[in-house]
Length: 440
Image (cartoon, rainbow, N blue to C red):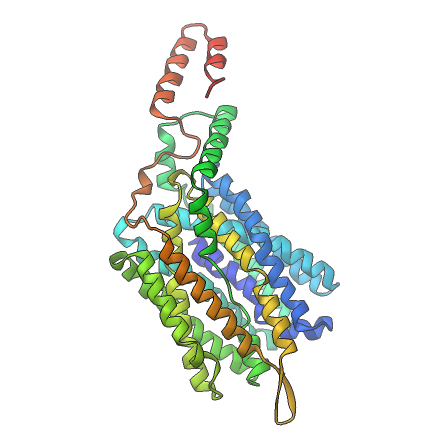
């Protein structure tokens, strides 16, 4: 629920509240559009910080309370965004960077909780559904922008007020749901607390970094981003903002269907094969995405390419969870996913900067060439995704729900701890207890 409604819904709703308002923000601050795109870059850049903080907290303390704290912080930063809009551009950029920290934490927490409690045979389908919160967030933001913003005295700031209220409501709702069943079961055989538990957790982290760095690198590069389509439709093709929003909403509907479709069939044909097929078909559709001039044909191209893009990306949650060291499903997938976002964070600003300097004329009016730039960027992204996925591996059907929690003791250490505790019950082995843990 939290990832669909916030991380894959309201969280992405607030992120897209900026991407659907680039032109409005540029006029408001009297800045170039590439300067406004810096806010998207900073949000993506700082998401990895949140993934590390909240991901590790989720593996150590459980999914529930780190998620609630994360949601509350996101709501606060949404309000701060609206407040800074009436002040100055520098504060706006700082708040968007801080929002990125909050935004980065939700993905790992919510996907780990959802997928680890899902039957193995249903994980591909629900991975595709979960990941489409990205598209759902855009649909919510674009719908509010079209239906509410024109009639609100607050203008586009109402987007952030609504986002803060809805996110806070999700945090409250999360209070009434229990901890992840799998996490609770994994903790049953490890009733250790305090400093010992933290020490064992840190030891597990070091082991994973040492033994799984290649897998980590593969997962990081597996993820990239593209977010300038509304600006392309408005500035390059010359459609009104309403028509641009309608086209993008139809495209995001294709994304939701594509993610669900490929997620489902990845359960049968494999994660890597499904990603490669979707990415290859997506690359073939790039000309239809940018060359036509009519609204209907461009929208059809956008629908189809988003079907393929999110078809590939809809498999990512379960693919990363299956490749993850099983005791680090809250942190490892989230950190890899957000580090991928960090690598891709300059994409929006690079796209905007190049496009604004590639000018062409229509009826004597200068327009930035976002079409050429987006085609180049997406060609590179699809090519890298196909090659990198083909070079990797997968663990489809992994029973990661059976693993011990991070920081849990091995069976031998558990027996040792129980033996020491029995001695303590009979008077006295405090010193021996401490001594036995020096080598842990």
